[in-house]
Length: 171
Figure (cartoon, rainbow, N blue to C red):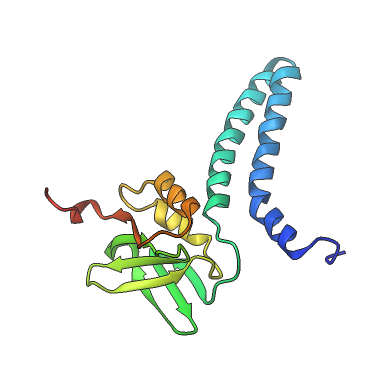
């Protein structure tokens, strides 16, 4: 049965599964809101609002997810981003992160530390989903800007996604 669905279609279904589940919660809430008696009616509105919020987050996660297979493994443990790849890697604490850029070909994250080191992480590496929450926790981070840059695809040069608020130029 696993060969019944093409691998590309299976990957797309897996990518959007969280969104589908959140939409199901929203629809169940709306069903209860419009057809439920008394307290169930109000519970339906609460469930629909909760589902709408979950749907928004799920759509953002699906857009963040990179297609394909990247080399290496990404872990986010105790405030540290860890990347282990066949040709290098490293560990960088989120507290020591000063800038995040997207490479010109949109295939790599360029994470810069306070000491000037740059950790190059493939967007499609195993465990890349953990970076969504790690990046969202950065001070002043704009997730919609990141998603817009990811959707644009390749560019002439690397694009700065985020810079630590204390590291901005005074101009």
